[in-house]
Image 1 (cartoon, rainbow, N blue to C red):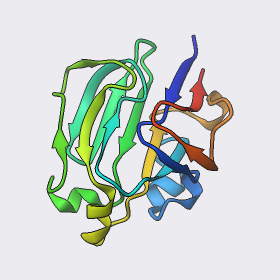
Image 2 (image 1 turned 90 degrees about the vertical axis):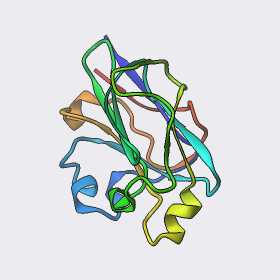
Image 3 (image 1 turned 90 degrees about the horizontal axis):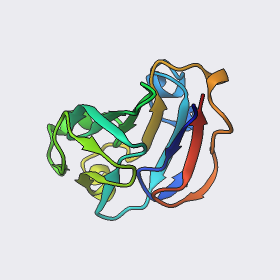
Length: 150
């Protein structure tokens, strides 16, 4: 079965190599891509149907029925903001649908706080050879396909 991972945000895909954090740019957490989000208040949505297994103001993981965990990380070093500027819209353990709002945030406010608004979207515990074509450039809308995962 193939998992289709869709964009949790609107913006521009830039690929993991362009993320200003060595853990993500080196794909140490897993392969995937990254989004330079539109600079306006928005909702980050679930990239797959599944269960929210990890939930923080700045990041969340949804695991689908295939056991594939997808990490959405809202900005870089945003854990240092201690949740300021982020609003959780679901709870850990909730079942969510693709496109369902998970966190409300404002990328412009993240930048004003001195952090990068770049958002990695990562296939956890995967290898590059398991992913189909990964979108790494061009504009993307919330819900557009980023990559597939075997």
